[in-house]
Amino acid sequence: MKKLLPLLLVSILFYFSAYAQTDTIPNKNSAVKDTIVEKSSKKKERKRVSDFKVYGGISANKILLSDSSFESAYATGYLLGFSYRQGRFGYWEIGANYNKSVVTLEGENIFKDNLKIGQLEVPLSAGVNLLSATRRVLGIRLFGGVVPGYITSVKDNPFNLVDDDFNRFQLSGRVGLGVDILFLFIEFGYQHGFIDVLKDQDSNLSQVDFRLGFRF
Image: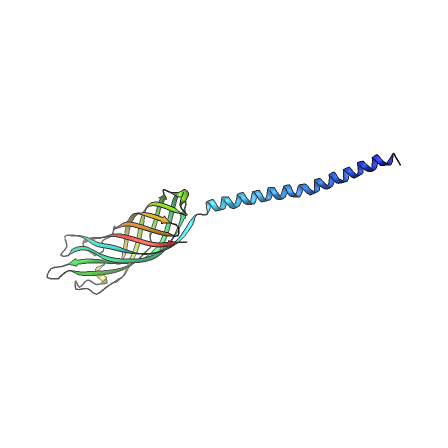
């Protein structure tokens, strides 16, 4: 009996040692898996930086004329649109908006009156966020890009200008400054037309705009 006692003690110790090892290994594996999943989710979160934006705004518009029987002055129009933006410090953005450009024209023997031009646009831009580390709370952006557009309508006017007097397809350049505050943003931009608005004469559309919107 005395000889069996040490053997019994050794067997018990061996059993508990084996049980402890089998119990801790899964915990170690679980911890490793949790660490990997956490790192992967954080990495994805860092990469996935995007916003969906909706906005409205007002604009001041003028047709830059030369060698024309008309004179132009700035008048107030409006615009509505949406866009998708992706990127942290450097970003790109694509959108669509309806731009109602209103310009004041004065012709020979015609008092000053407004000319209203409706246009569908697809702005494409790239920019930098100077406060990318705090972009979800506060961001300051500089951007520039091109704006392809198509003139959809020209309102009746005393200048006898109709749809056929305009180049329907338009292309403009736009630069600006944007400020993001939580879920709101504001933008100040300048847009200059590269294609003449009126056929057969120099007539580039110049636009200064202010936009206010929400980002999600």
